[in-house]
Image (cartoon, rainbow, N blue to C red; front, side, top):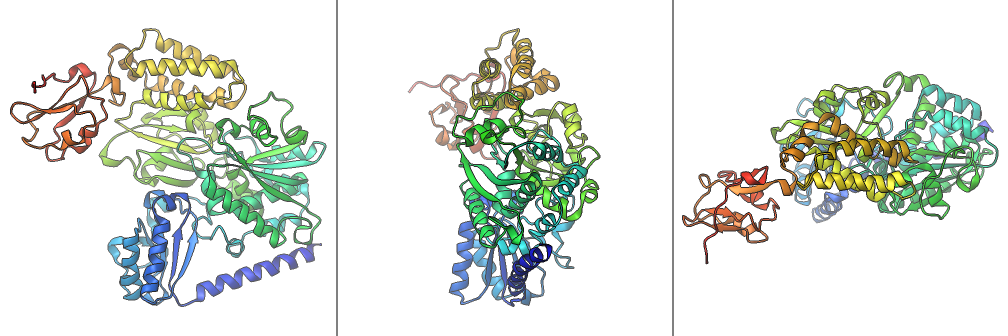
Length: 638
């Protein structure tokens, strides 16, 4: 069987390598364009069309290679141009608009001028152009799961095979199921969906259970600001599928499902195509690569319920019921989908498996920390210069990630806090910037690893309003099964809304703490147990801000509208300038007797448009909290 296995795969690999070599050896320029959702949202489709039109107009030949996300979402649309005849290495361009695409076609592809002012860096060492690998955003990452993202065309299986894809599956089929499970257990891989449960142990429990096993890839990613799973499915779906195949083989499963939310149409399309391509090459279906291993993978589109990220709710959803968690035990590995033993793993967990099998457990353990081996992927968003996806070794500090890798806080503002672990995570202040990023350290600090969402906040952020925002999300996403979660989060949200509106009561802070602890203790699933985390951590580390809202009717971050007012500094206001008045949606801005502007506090809706519109040369519009500090100027009668 081993000989037939290698013969079947070698035929696929030879075809893949022949295609790759033909592409690389072609003397024409190659244009690699990032076409994941972040790239498309930034205009990558228009950029691609601009390249095609410019090449046609100039009667030039070039190969356009569409790839997934590089992780550098702040730089989209991202384009790498490999122009063999120019003498330059492949060059990384950022923010390539259609106009810039036409310019590069003319000046670089046709005339040989790379336009250094638009270059982000080179992908190889060069005296004239710095290598992007020298920049902190690149050289401090450790890519295991995202290694091929931005390098392969996610809609071409041969691209993945040529980069070493499916070699781990071939190795797996030559080993026993027990050997695969032992290797994953030895690697120390923990679930990347948030709970951090040992992956190998889950596989072993399912393997020991009776009945047909089922594997589920949990891609129901619903955290605000999180898009790691979506990007992996859009950029390198075959690595996820390969991880599913290895998992299914180890557990003895013959059926598997990718559970992905319907709000990810591009990911759904690409995964379905990847499954079809794998089947056509004999990597899925009956007798995979002439072995006795059979596996069918299908795609189930969820309706977008955040609670379906919890595995028992997800299973109920697939079965056609409303997504609601159930009591455990029995655990899904004993009795899951359709009553059968079910392994549910996150996208990032499964995508980590091929590298473990191919390079070994010791290699994987050499990355990260003793109790949290491997890497972690975060979508870093908010008040940070280089927002995007980052893959780092476990154990790297929050300071290194936020300031060294992601460039720190924009506009020379100070760091205030980071919300880590999604809406159910914790809000950590600057005192915790040196905290290592791993499962245990973050939990000890009051946060959690979560699925990898990270929101960075600058000095102007109101943590009370941020807590209200996240609790509003989790309260709406509660399935309603638990009294503590359904009613408790509603009361928590009511108190927070009261505080941000300047209607707080003296005992509100005590009530927040009391309710939060009861909700954590009494809820059934992870949603309810972790929903109060933003409230508890922000109360713990930013209590002075809560007290300012409650006792002084003041918002230190000046984000809560009812506790904030806008006014115009007459000493800085320019006579005759009507910019602020022209942008006011309610005509609250009026002219004083000396032709300067003022704001009618009685009708101002506090939208802040006047603050944005006021020319920097004047900076006359000011923001103040509490509202009674704003000077009152009578509006002249018409």
